[in-house]
Image (cartoon, one colour):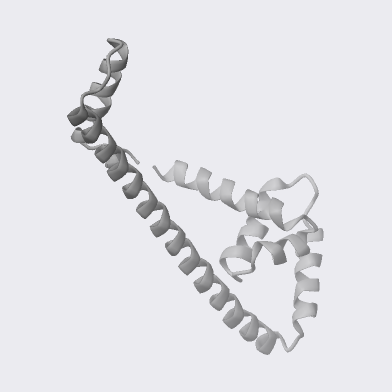
Length: 149
């Protein structure tokens, strides 16, 4: 977002706040500059948000396609139905000691990153609401990005 703070915008903001501090009205030119710069900032921000949404949607579609392919391969290799495979995942998760949060985290990440399961399916396997898994994944991704930077 700081990429959108242009010197012109900062100058327009400064003149507006200076006018407010001095209890005076902005001149027609100052008001026009301010409105233009704020509009440019808002438009740049909206374009950026739209680009992030498009990229996120593209990622989710790719993730879904990878899941479909992985699911077919797993069913063929194991010679099992999808229900039997998810039951197997449930047994594996249930075998993790209740106090071993790290192992639970690793298991859920494996389901998401290796097998491309959706948060809804992961929630069904670990017996948690899908919204909880979504929030957990977002929090984990945020913390992981924070550790990288």
